[in-house]
Image (cartoon, rainbow, N blue to C red; front, top):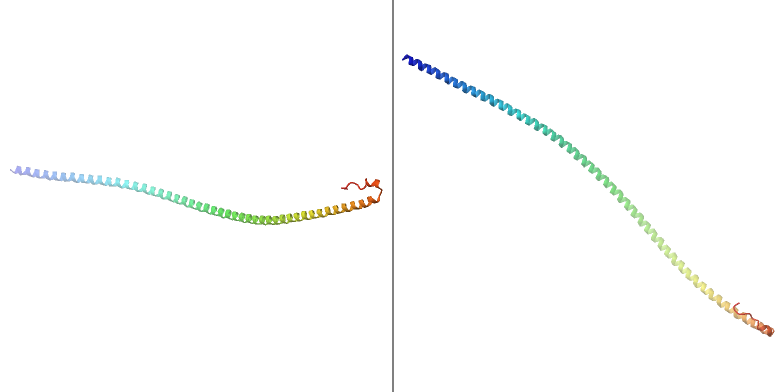
Length: 180
């Protein structure tokens, strides 16, 4: 029977070896699993670093683009302000020019109205003068006609007196025809 014991011992040792071997396999599996997890974590970390680098590079590009756009916007604002200032200056200059021209035209209208009034007064005075001169002429002509008629009458009377004192043969030829 001792042999049986021996076998039992051998079995027990073999079981220990099997247990140790199972533990070794399990430990080795755990070790491999840990190595795989470690490798997976390294790869994951490397991927995260790459993503972080790309994100940082993208962030830097976006910041640079934002700065460029802000500079462009500031330039556009500055240009807009300059354009606005220039347009305001031109508007004021044009407004001043229009006001100056308006004042000049108003002054010219006032001056022309004064000239027109003066010309109208002169025309009225000239017309009155002409009417007075015509009236004076008409009176003078009437006086001259009356004077001429009076002189003709006196002349005829003188001729008539002179004609009677002369020979009758000449009386027919004397006085000359009236209207001389």
